[in-house]
Length: 120
Image (cartoon, helix red, strand yellow):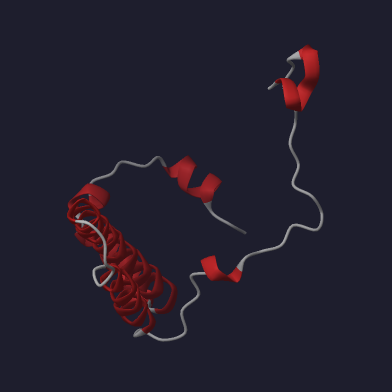
């Protein structure tokens, strides 16, 4: 905190610089339904390549654990990307998510909140 505000220790309002660059690697705009699966396969292949590395037994055991974690993360990303694509490109998908998943279907919402959250 001292480096940011000196000895005053007061809150500082942060505003990103005007020349903020968007990193397209983190973009989730898929053009085809197959893209999330292709990305999953690529992620799993990269993770699997770690298993071919050489080292002592402790390092190999750690590599297996890291690859397992990477595989779980890749599957989670695949699920998220697939849902994102479907909601973005298939009108029925969002309706089905909201009307068929019990936790969402039974979620109470006040009428005023719906209109407050709607975009014009």
